[in-house]
Image (cartoon, rainbow over all chains, first blue to last red; front, side):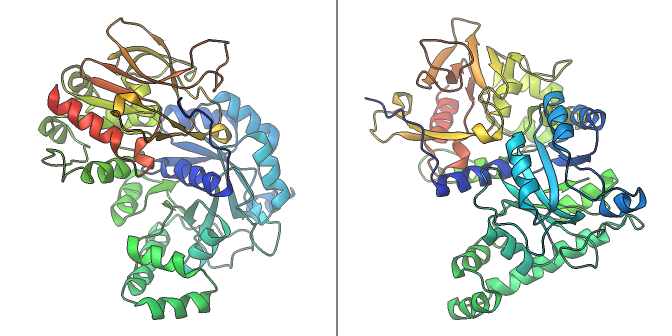
Length: 252
Length: 204
């Protein structure tokens, strides 16, 4: 008698599926869009997926609008207009906006301070049944987000701390920031690979992270989730350079 | 070009001890395509893969390759191989027009409907261990358009069907030199489907 019951989604299975979804984004360009038309253009030109956004925090302030995550009605229109994955961008830590995105049926949620901050801490991500994508600037931040349940990370360009809005460098579309972050994180991972178990344990204690996570990073010699470049990615040659560096894909 | 290609590389590498695999090549150029004997088109986004292939100038060579040499399309790769696809983006999408089946994109719905299921798979051999099938925003084969197409794996009835049907949805087929699967065997550590393809490619 063939076994034909689908796995009931235990939390481990659900995490596994979420990780598998983001793995399939690798090698692709995910386009940030604000309208249905932009999303259609992105699909026509080979985008791997789209991230739906309302306004960047700085733009919202200029337009005298309330900074907020993606509008669910816009997200739904885009979902019926394109076949590629639609990702909803929500304010950093905003669990309610994230739940709304999940209810819309998005392929993933992106937790971003570019659109503003909804909370002083980032969200608990494991209770969501969609992958959550987070922005990071160094290894510790990447691992913190991953231990919270992030299924993918993206480089965060800007000098402000996570949680403050307006970190995107609109005035300086310079991909050297994204390169810098990649190289810095690779250096930090190199350091981990040279540590023995006791040293990793000490680092895990200091960073308040599980030892297993640090061991996994040391073994893989890379982050255990897809790592995309973001921040001033505008031109094809910039994408080529970032991919050459070792990023798994770009957000543009 | 895009998608879970590294996982396929790992799976094939895991077979090098037991199967006659000379080299595993990541194909991005026509030269690389010309150098290989068999091809896996990985999961990812079928529209993106086709567009990138076209831009890289290998889409035509790819179309030629899949007619002659062993080719395995998983998920997006299956869509790309097909002669006919439904639920595609408005205006259609470029297909390789090789596998005479009709594939329905995102048959099981959006990401939240991704799932895994363990099934007995007699085509993999008479071992009793079921294979764990991973479906991520998966397509399904909704009709076979040529009597030579061999159905290999069917889901139990009731999974992801929009029309009532006694038979379950087809998720793996074989036709001449081509293998098409809508699931992702490269996302598990079980390499039996990769072994199936390698033997198919070697045996002819």
